[in-house]
Amino acid sequence: MAQGEYGGRVRRENGSVCFSDGTLAGSALTMDQAVRNVVRSPGASLEDGVRMASETLAEILGLS
Image (cartoon, rainbow, N blue to C red; front, side, top):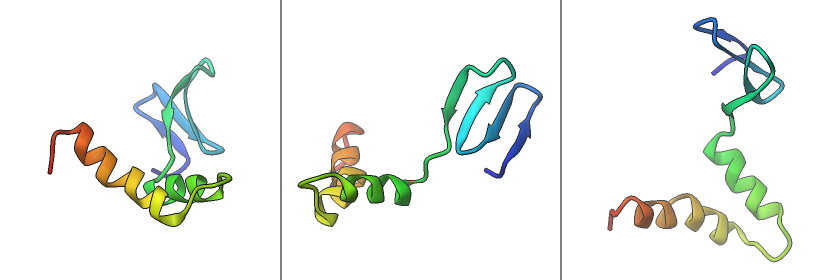
């Protein structure tokens, strides 16, 4: 979602999604950015990041 106001209740700005009073309402993190964040962690590999974004999530959802 692009920066802007959505439904008069939440606003995306500077990578955050907040209510009009500034309270955090959610995240605008994309899956590719999440994988990059993992890979930047000490001791984590690209394989770790991709597994966390796919296999682990599938297991949580009960998918094989």
